[in-house]
Image (cartoon, rainbow over all chains, first blue to last red; front, side):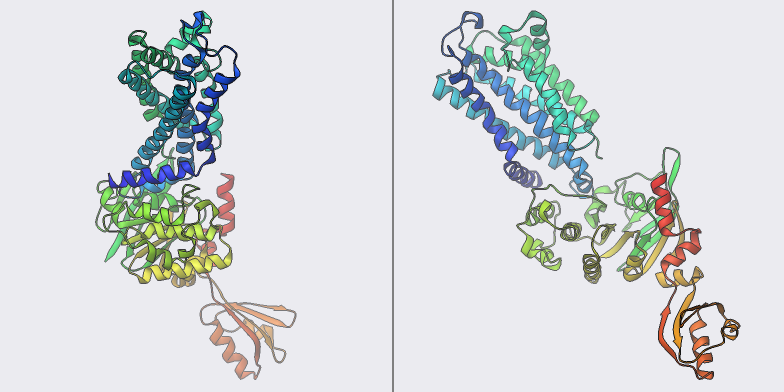
Length: 246
Length: 310
């Protein structure tokens, strides 16, 4: 535990020293502000969004956005870099091995995604008067499962990336379709039928759906949570299978 | 007492024997060298004793422990510096040492190690901003922070400029003087000659010689050479007929005589009798590069190139 605590401390320092991390943390709330102020009629309830405002619909999307960005870009690059630089090999020659480093990297990434999420929620509440979640518990469960699934995807990218520089490129190749399915460019309510069906089955689409229901109290998102749990387990197992030291 | 014992070690990759029956031991307090061209199996050998690879054959003991069965204990007692291993770019020198110190129950004092390795004034510098020599010194510090009995240093000075290389050699001797036995992997014969008490010369996965560097150089039949400018003309025919002389050459006014271990004595005694003074005298003893050629039939450079082509 002492080693893990110290390693988490250093991982957080390393992330703070990376300018990209700071940008990623700031990005989701900035996008929210952009949508809120840049699109006419953002504050009016819309019939085709089930009576919600555009800003309401985007809050869950941006929370998932923060997790997907961290997982596919930050976690993947960190793992590929540590493998490529021989840091994992070096740690294997110490009594503690590389597991504390991997755990610390996931914890630190989760912490940064959480900061981005909290900033987004604060901006949504303070500037656009978006309500607090109807069910905190279900919202937190959805976010936790989404983080598990999306960070696992990041670990898979980090494992298959042939070098540290390829990891972010691969990450964005995965991130763009994931966020399209999550509704970043046009909300799930506006998707054509086939895309909506694919979105329902994707980790990002399921996470956004579960969060929307939990947030605005529109019924228990049982099927979305189930899909999220299955993706978390499946991607988690795949990440372990794909892992390599060098 | 031996701190490391390796018996008949074997490791194959895809049917190719990379390490093929390697045996040696490292005595307590010794600097032992594993020497050979790139791809000879040196790194694979030490990776087996660091527990990074599982041997296919043979036996390894580090302070009486098996790196596979007692891995955790071995990793506590053995400090490793890996070939081409880096640290997180934005991690600072002092942080790296504090971090690694946390891995051990009874670590060395990080500040003292930084002082020993001349890194004290760089403790706030990020790894990526260090020079190659400073990065290597940090990797030595990290290999020592657990207070190991044995340190394995793999290609420590590769890529360093000659001055940084010489500085690093001095440090390794200081580390040994602190009671740490050292297993040094290198493809530089000069480094092995300068530092090692004993060496194993490895070629194509096999030990081709194992002794002190000087004994290997001489036993491999390398030639002693002396080069001088005679104060008066000498008869090269008569010089060539002296016992132990194998060749005599003339380069402008200089004479170069090659022969066995007695050749210097023999030639000097003969010159004295002839009342000729040997001016600008230079004596070359056989070195490990010559020995490698004698042992394997090719030069170290050729062996390195053959490895690149394979």
